[in-house]
Amino acid sequence: MGNRFQVTDRFADGAQYIGGRPRHGTSGQDHHVIDPATGESVLTYALASTADVDAAVAAAEAALPAWAGATPGERAEALHRLAGVLAERADDFARVESLQCGKPLKLTTEFDVPGTVDNTAFFAGAARHLQGQSAGEYSGDHTSYVRREPIGVIGSIAPWNYPLQMAAWKILPAVAAGNTVVLKPAELTPLTSLMFAEAATAAGLPDGVVNIVTGAGRTAGEHLVGHPSVAMTSFTGSTAVGKRVAEIATATVKRLHLELGGKAPFVVFDDADLEAAAHGAVAASLINTGQDCTAATRAYVQRPLFDAFVARVAELMETVRLGDPFDPATDLGPLISHAQRDRVAGFVERARGYATVVTGGEAPGGDLKDGAYYRPTLITGAAQDSEVVRSEIFGPVLVALPFDSDDEGIRLANDTPYGLAASAWSRDVYRAGRATREIKAGCVWVNDHIPIISEMPHGGYRASGFGKDMSVYSFEEYTQVKHVMYDNTAVAAKDWHRTIFGDR
Image (cartoon, rainbow, N blue to C red; front, side, top):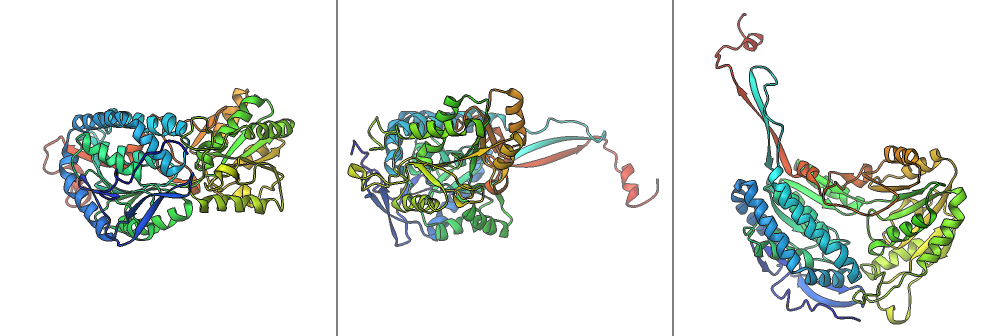
């Protein structure tokens, strides 16, 4: 395997970051960070206890008054410096992300890391545009205006599929708005979240503004969500775990932001550019080895194009190069773990009983046998109510189904409990426009599938959760809206008082 980042010495001081410095967890339980490309442990660290969560929340509370009281310009300047530190350390971030996740280095260097730097630069600018409604005399006798104020300490939980980007999506809008953060990354992939917090300190963000606790979900995670000093919970992960997070958060009447699962439809109308749709389907279904909640998972193809689409997608999938994530020629890395690989394989094996596996459907042997690899897989012949069509597989698996009328295609696209992302493929602007209006998802691409930008919001409908990451819309998640109203009359006995006591 290629040149790997040595992390043992790098994280020798522990996998917690509290009050501006690293420390060891105190749970008494060790956890291994596994390189999924080899199955080997690259770091052993002590998990956080509930006491560590309490310490992190206390550090965030202590930092809150000064950070919330900083001017927008001061917060913006700190985030601009952070963008610079992240850019300087980009190579280290990319290598560590590839090591802990198994992502090909070309993905981390061209997507994960530059996307995070760009997000940081965006929120540095956005910090200076936290505005409410302008002042006005809406009642005639009063002047009203709206303030946006920080919520307080934010308790965030990020997933393992995009550890760096998801940490940034949680932290950046929160701190730009004047909040402080305690983030719990996934135990499998804590390393780049810790590096992000270290970079924040190096950029001059005050100690305690960004804190990281790396612990088990049922102990550290649930304690963080239910902590009485945490004013808001932001969670990205599965819908099942999101329901548990919501139960705990609502018990203490916290603000809640959930970005959950997805089962994105990829709708190809019969006038679409077949070659573009086939290339798009392969890229959109295989990004991050399919471990992406917006990945294309259900390709609905109008019947005149269906056979040609299936043939071309299968042909392209067979050209995808599995290999060492650190080899520049590698297209597809391993899944996050052998357990996840086996879960994906289980979906495919069960599907063989009711559908056709056109290509893939197996783990490679040879030099890759020790890693959590799985070949790109295309399935046809599955019924709309089958497991592979309904459930989130979270692996390199695309299911293709035919449809006849446009009405049917849109109906099938919406036939899911989820609603995070979708795409429509057509040369007809009216046909595509109808799809963007009628498909129930937080993002609908036209003739593409996957690209995201810092200026636009990301978030879903229905079982995919609620609230937005990125963009200025994220400030709606991380700020309190306060109405301030001034009397302009200086009259002691106001006319409206007579509705309560006295006469006109």
